[in-house]
Amino acid sequence: MTTARYGIDDNPVFVIDQSRCIGCEACVQACAECGTHRGQSLIHLERLDRRTTTQTAPMVCMHCEHPTCAEVCPADAIKQIENGIVQSALKPRCIGCSNCVLACPFGVPKMVAELDQMMKCDMCTDRTSEGGKPMCASVCPSQALWYGTIEEFEETRRGSLLRDFLFGRQEVRTKVFTVVDDLAGGPVDVLGTSATQWLDDPFGLGET
Image 1 (tube, helix red, strand yellow):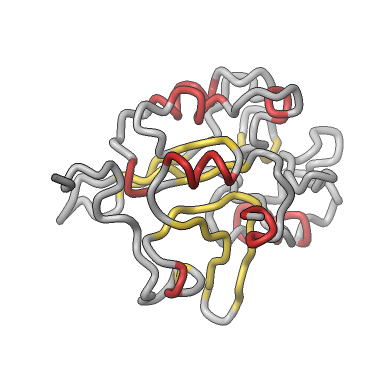
Image 2 (cartoon, one colour):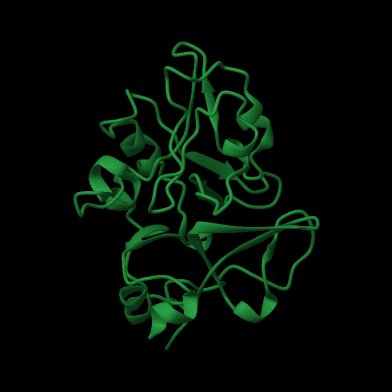
């Protein structure tokens, strides 16, 4: 089975296809409306290189298999639940030290000063646990943020799914997948040059 090749079950997966992002910020607005976020948008929209391109890229919590944010939390406030989702810091335990903010290799956790609490994407657990999609994926017009099964992805989308990232010598495996052109390039080398590339034509516009 396809899912066996990825080492996961047949439950829906969260996918980011950076090459499809059109910078509309619909995801940013929708994230703030998630019932557990208290009006806070917990998604980042990055500008890759303002000097040379208008390309943007959405960034949600990647939900690492071994979350550094939880490992460095001195108050044991950050929990990883059974399905692999890493939650925001528990309000009664969070001491606002920002260790998690500094330690996350993806730069995701956000210290919300007015709440004195670290908050981050929890993959809209209130929605996904009931069979719904995360808010951001439900509104993304270009499907740069996508939620569904591996089989559905391979039937309808271009590219390959990868969830291994390289930060120097440290390899990080995540619950969230990213779309690459070719798996032969290996993990996405975040800090250096990698053979792994995003899709040049994710929508198939160049086809005749």
